[in-house]
Amino acid sequence: MDSIQPITARNEECLYRLLNIWELSVRYTHLFLSEQDIDTLRPLVIQGMEHISHLLAFIDDHDQSLGFIGIQDNKIEMLFVEPAAMGKGIGKSLVAYAIQTLNVRYVDVNEQNPQALGFYERMGFQVFERSALDEQGSPFPILHMKLSIGSR
Image 1: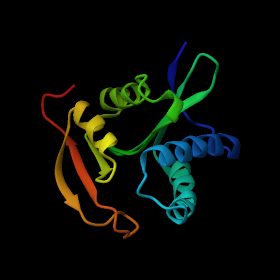
Image 2: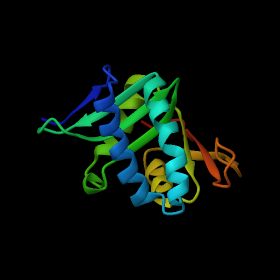
Image 3: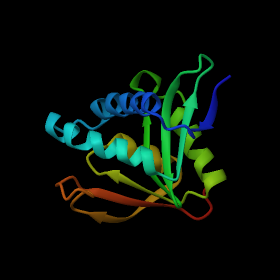
Image 4: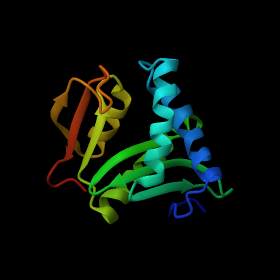
């Protein structure tokens, strides 16, 4: 049966499986990123997965990770789903779990990723601020979103 499980053993095999999900997802949804951008982000993603407070995976009934979410404090720092599994409720399940059990209230979204923006809006988040640059200082605008009162 499908389940959401905390990732406690963040060994190399686990992290590279999640990194593969990240890369497939980014290539599918972040069309504004170049190969060089992806290469630059890859070690930052691994570092983030190693150190983030809460890392959870969506595991299917074949014991395969189909997506994952990373939470720091009350903010979603990463959410990625394998493209073949998109549209099947995996992201929604991970976000709903994070809201209900980890008190998530914030998320940042690349402005150039309208699919993610629409997803988070459907989950009850609203844009409250925009930054012209991402965390690495690159010209990829970020929309800062907050869970609207009364959602979930």
